[in-house]
Amino acid sequence: MKLSFKSKPMSVYSEVEVKAADGAVLFTSETEPLSPEHLTRLKDASHSIVATTVSPVLEKASRAHRIEFADGRAMDLKRTWPHTWSTVDSTVIADEPAWRCSIHRAWTTRFCLRDEDGSEIAVGTQELGGLGDAYSVEVLDEARLVEVVAFGLVVCRVIALDRPAPAA
Image 1: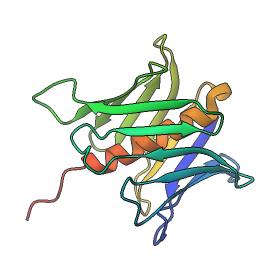
Image 2 (image 1 turned 135 degrees about the horizontal axis):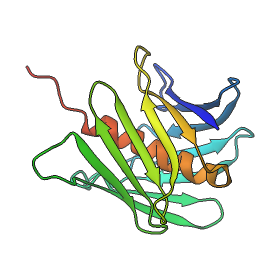
Image 3 (image 1 turned 45 degrees about the vertical axis):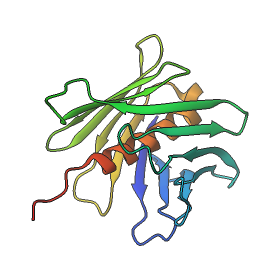
Image 4 (image 1 turned 90 degrees about the vertical axis):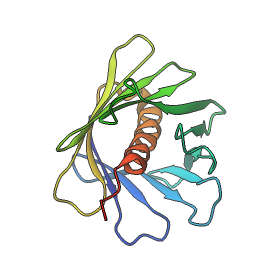
């Protein structure tokens, strides 16, 4: 299943729309602008909350996030650097289930999400030329669509936060 993650320009709630290939909006994420823990709600097409994500403000070093799903499950995510000498590659790791997302930055940013068995469950590529952050994501395991979308949105946020600041 091919999805498009696009941030809405000029959105007060830092909204991101997740659309199917036919343009139908499947999910929307909304972030509370004044929330100290960066509270984000992931809503499905019927506007029901399917997941909530928080990121403690003081947890900048590891870009920690916690995803809580509507059914009571939760994922704790942290970003690590596989090489101490390079910031081109990073990894976002979930504790339970043991998912890993490898991120590679070059002319475009790419990421690959793998499950606990090492099987690819989603692959994303940054779309160039659009306003804001936009990613094309191929979901290879549709049975875990909500989890993949929630994890993918955290990965997109980590990528944005890790982007090098322009030189003065």
